[in-house]
Length: 580
Ligand code: FES
Image: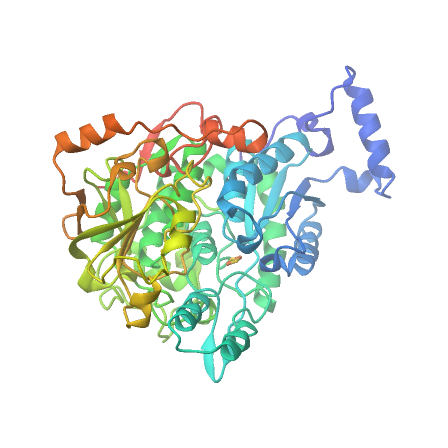
């Protein structure tokens, strides 16, 4: 890369001067204020590297932020830059009501506008918990600066009565055992102490780990940036390297549009399929791509799945945890296996292509977490895209986490109108439900809840759970945590709250799910469906003021990433993936 910024008046502290009508005075004033913090002219003449601090007492997934900040600053200074740390909002999954997804776009706006407003030549985005990384990349993509992602890293696993446990697949598993009466109150409290054994993000292939791997596949982290756990020396070294890399990017003018290309998104989707990644990854990729003017082609993604096996043996699709993936060589091991399928010319933040980084990675060694291409953990990609009269805009299922026996299934609909209705009735002994039925939950889509909460993991009704039923087909317009497991159809588009066909499913209707045929059908005639739509017009939800009003007026559907319509690129320039 040699396209350096030409005009020195457009770099460092001189960038984006506050408007006082007199440029010279604006810079004079800015320097006077920053010198109040004790900076010298020599420091202020260096490339300025913004570092986003998303530490928060409400966000233990970012609990190593002080150590990361220190290491990034060290890297920036060793490379001759001036580190400037600043905050944005931070979002943790369990501390964000009604759901973290409701706030992702707000965080992306905060990120974008702070990158635009404050002078910096490059930015280090530090995020980890599920929505933070996509929010930061969405914001940075729109701001257009050189930007590099630093992941906080995964938590360590704990031990419960000699069994290794980690959030959050095991959280759900143990809660399921408690609901089924298999463990008592005392054991429930005991395991609660062990599920999150350190600061850091969830230790399985949930959304946070998925987005970490996707970030590296997109070329947005330094090589090896996805997998080191939060509390390890490797993670701190990655932070230092990230700081140094940001200075290089600033000097070379390696802006984010040179990294986030259609090829980069295709690599990210390939990796999403091969890691058995969270279904949320698709929504986030659609949102980030939308900022770059690219539409995600869901059908092309589905076709990619046919030639992309799941290779990473991590929970919930497999057996291991993120720390094992790191010990197995991390993303370098996986990318080496996927190499024939990757777009190797895609540029990365290091200034080298993905292919060059794969070639430069340390040699492979024996390990049992990343399978060889010809001995996969699951023969096809983890995610399948469904169509049919119930989901004209598509729906998805994580087939690698589903029960093989339920993937071709026809059953009677047991309908819940919304999350409150579900909470009221799901455990009622009077609920008319059998293991052959299909649970349908409406109104948990982007506008319905609002914010498309991870409520698509509908619990097994208590009476079935107590009878030993472990899985049942479930359908909704919501999302589910990447740590969840089951035959669960998600992201039904258009959602019920805006009048999608899902809104018109009734108790007792027959529904057919065929993953083989990529079909999700409500087994009523077109005439009957049209009549129901006519008889029951849906009024989309509204709000009187504030962020909720903005959200409900502008949020897009799942296939567009649930981004706000006015935040997507003004002009769409293409589709990704392009290979079919
Ligand atoms: Fe933060 Fe799972 S709760 S990554």
